[in-house]
Image 1: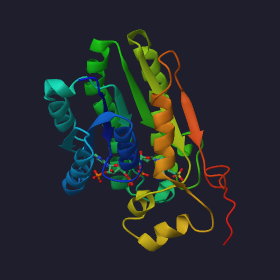
Image 2: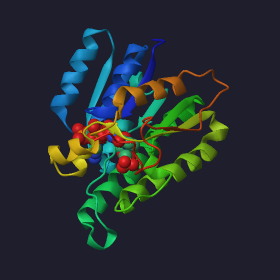
Image 3: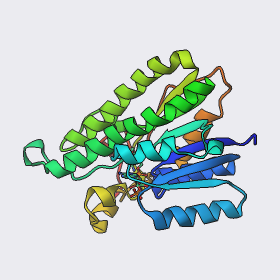
Length: 253
Ligand code: NDP
Ligand code: 8X3
């Protein structure tokens, strides 16, 4: 089997789902991860109709034992993972540190940092065995700068920035590429999750300007993974044309 394999975390929505569709369209078989099994099943059925082979793993990236067991017990034909997209992540809340909800902090730290680490820890040995592979970490403009009330979310994305650099050094001798993609505002379920399901508040984030859509980020990921073998894209910051910094927008309201 010559088809390449991509593993995408957070494939049930937004950037992860768009990336799954884009990579499948471009000849990848896919391992898709998320907690919402109904969505995984729908995506799997849709892709299989178009001839893509799909392995669906319903798991929570925060739970190391789930990640370890699922990855270590992959059927042999799924172990040759060429591309890992560490995308699963979230913001929970937007409040000052002194008023922050510690449950929100734990969810963000456990998902955005520890989840990314667990997946990478258990997937990368397969790449190292083959001396081949490409890891794509989804960072954020929030990993390049900090904005008021973004404290812990920004810290988790700064951690992704540091981990991207660290893993690139550690994996250099194993011929594994490591890329970070840092989006500005992308309209997905991100703000609905951040505001605990308050759709009106979430919609307001994207009012008055043209935000990115998930497919824009999927395009960047496809570009990074389709460079010739001697080329690596280290880091890409991708913003809406109407957004200059994490908080400065040209909104026409
Ligand atoms: P969505 O909320 O649309 O998607 C988030 C995805 O992550 C879902 O598929 C969700 O699946 C998955 N996920 C969350 N927690 C877990 C978990 N514990 N275990 C497994 N999967 C999990 O948001 P986006 O697509 O926007 O977010 C994707 C990434 O992009 C995140 O890392 C986010 O920080 C980053 N980002 C987003 C930006 C934006 O403006 N939207 C900008 C910059 C970066 P499920 O709920 O089924 O588990
Ligand atoms: C998600 C976008 O606005 O929180 O990373 O920086 S933002």
